[in-house]
Amino acid sequence: MIKRSALLLIGLMVLQPVFGQNSDQDKLREAKLFFGHQRYSEALSILSSSRQLSRFDEEARFLIAVCQYQVNKLDDAYRNLVALTKEDESPYPECWLYLGKIFHAQHRFKEASDHYKI
Image 1 (cartoon, rainbow, N blue to C red):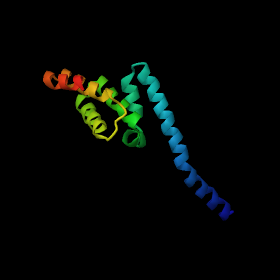
Image 2: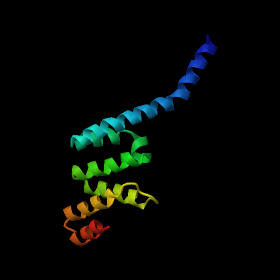
Image 3: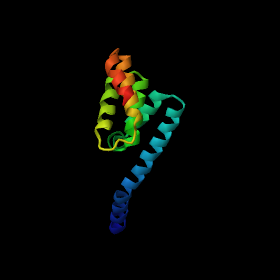
Image 4: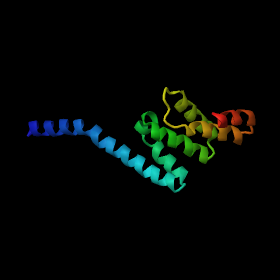
């Protein structure tokens, strides 16, 4: 009985990261649906609830930054977009567009035009 319980416990501990990944992917899928329907604050809430997505998944980090821009959290969006553009090969050229939009919203037109040209 004790061996059986120990094996079950070990099995659950080993499988937990697998279940957690599915959960994160489900969250990302759900957030993308909200994002597609322009429900940015719901998408942001879902994406921010997963530490794994908000720290390590590039697509999720990009969506978080865009959602932050859309809900007028410009400073947070700026920090996240700059972090994405500092990576060697940022797969999202839209980062530069959103950085330009942030500068434009802050009436920093020279910096905005510089980012629009990139």
